[in-house]
Every structure is written in structure tokens, then in C-alpha cells.
Image (tube, rainbow, N blue to C red; front, side, top):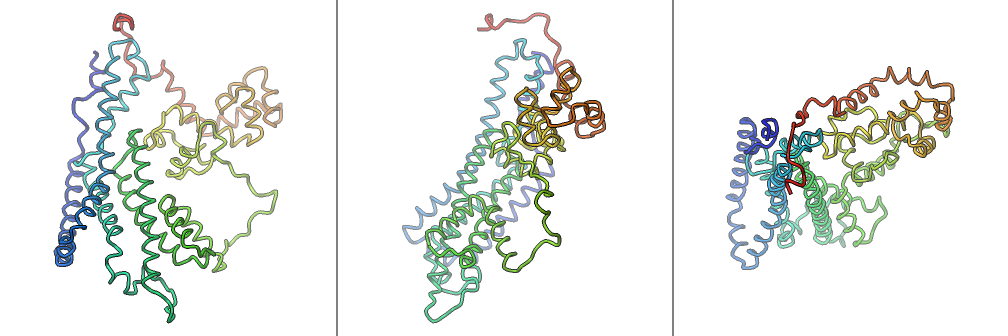
Length: 429
């Protein structure tokens, strides 16, 4: 094995920075001290509850459920080792000198698995504590009659306290809706963690996102519960279902509640909407080949919500943040650049003649069929020279072209020199 190949597979995992360790440990100590102080202040009520034989199964269940997301994260270490070992099994063959092999080995080398040390210490600990406390609150919440019976600003809202108004029943309903929202968020978190660990796409900030998302989901469900009259929903089962939906997708419900609030307040935009025929068309990401809903959701996390926005992106920023191949991302951006120029119908017509992105389009403009290509795209058949000049001054196209050309095998500086002789596949077998 060459030195460059050996370096691609370090014997130890990447070590977090020393300042990151101190910050994580410091934050964990502060959180532990805060929880310890809270437990000390409520020790009498806690000890009374623990005396009940039924409390221990609840406590044990809460701990196990809270640790499940962390257990999923730990499997990333095993996944990384298996990936590296599989690549090492063919490092004596000629294919180890290819661009794809070199880039794959470097990509696996850069993976820092989630662990209870370093940069993941505090995010994992915070996620475990948050899940544990919220699950414990859900399991034993109805036993705290003082919390349910006594008027609470969060659980009660501004409901009129008429003589026949049952405060305890209403606050119990609010608590149940918030519990459903947390369960919905927990299911969402598990599914996302499984996907991200499987794709080596888990970062410390992701764990903070899932922890804070549970609070956002429960708060959204609470506000929605107090706004049922505005939403014209009175059925209790529907309210509970909406609470669960708030956990799965709180952003959508926040937008819906905001729009309804603006309608009630009669707050509109300072400018009128464009008249029909003058309004720009929406450049949907669904037009791009292979961009499914899941991939579009991941791009939306980066603020990329349209084909126009995608057409101006730096592919390396997307590649560093999302678990997709660099070549695939470049293909998406190139498709978006063509779509921005020709729009929907012309895009479909160009695909029929094997023109799928801006690179194909420019190449075909240099051939004898340029006039036919432009007619298919709904453009002036004599505009080939002008279009090529237009693209030669487009910074997004030129920068993307530079990256695409650099990825060609003959231009890839990281590829090892082909070996003069080596074992064949049959000999290794």
C-alpha cells in the first residue's frame, strides 16, 4: 500500500479540539449542577413519589427512551469502521488509483463519529436530559393535581372563567395536546437520526436542533390548542391529531397560525400583488431530476427553496453540509441554471433530445444543430452566438464549469499514479 493510501485510513479517530472539549465539559457541569439544585429543592416531593412502587417502572422507561437517540448516534462509530475496512479490502487493486477511490477514502477519513467525548459531549447530554425530563413529565403529569387544578398561564391561556368552566379539564386537554406534540417530535427525531447516521451526516448542532425542536413543537401545540376557535376546530380527537402533527412538522403549523393571525389583524403587505400575467412563475425544485421531497427538505434547511436559488449556489458548501455526492450536486445546479433560462415546457422538450443541463446546452450550441436546439427551447434560432457570449460573462456558470472540469480524472491532483504492475481480481480471489 502506498503512503498516500495508508494516510487515508488513520488508526485513531479524529480528535476534537481542546477548546471544544473544555466548553462542552463546562456546559455539562453547569447543567448537572442546575439539575442537582432543582432536585435538592424538590427532594421531599421526589422522595415521596419514589416511595410508590409504580414510580420505578416509569422512571426506568423514561431513561431507556431518553437514551435511544444517543444509542443510535453511537452506531456511527461502527459504521465508519466498516466503511473504511471495506475500502481497505481492495486497496491493492488497480481501482485504488482512481479518482472515486481516493475521494471516498478522504470522505470517510473526515467523519467524526458521535461520542460522549469532545464536541458531542454536551449536545448528547442535553438531548438525553431533555428527553428524559419531558417523558417523565408526560408519564406523571396528570398525578400533579396542583398543576392541573391551579390556573396556569401556559395551560389555560385566556379562556373565560365562567361559572360552568372546568379549569382542570381544559388544562388537562392542553397538557395532552402538548404531550402528543412531543411524541410526534420524538418519532421525527428517531427517523432523522437513523437517516443521518446512516449517511454520516450527523453534526453536534443537529442534536441541539432536535432538543430545541421538542420545545418548539410543544409551544406550537399549546398556542394551537388555545386558538381552536379561530381555526374552527372543536372536535377533541382532531385537536389531539393536530398536536401530533405539530411535533412532526411544527414549521408548517407556525406558518398557518401566523397567516390566520395576520388575517384577523388585517395586516397586509405594503405592496399589492402583481396582476395576473405579470407575476413571475415559481421555479420549483421538483423540476430538477432526482430531487425528491426528502432531498428538497434538506436543501430547504440551507435556505435553498427554489431552482433559481439553487442555480447560484456554491456546490462545495452544499456538499460539506449534506450527504450527497459532489458530482450529483453539480448536476442539480447545472440543471437549475438551464431551467432558469428556458423554463418548464422548453425544459421538458430539451430532455427529449438528451439535453438535461446547462453544459449539454452550451455544447450543443457549438454544433450544426444549434438552430434546432434553440427552436426546441422556444428561442430565436439565430441567437446561438449571443447566448454563448451571455454565458461567458455569467459568474455562476463559469465557476460551476471550473469545478466540473477540475473533477475530470486527468485534472484530479489527488489521484495516485497507476502502479506498474499489480495483482488482478482473479489472483486476489
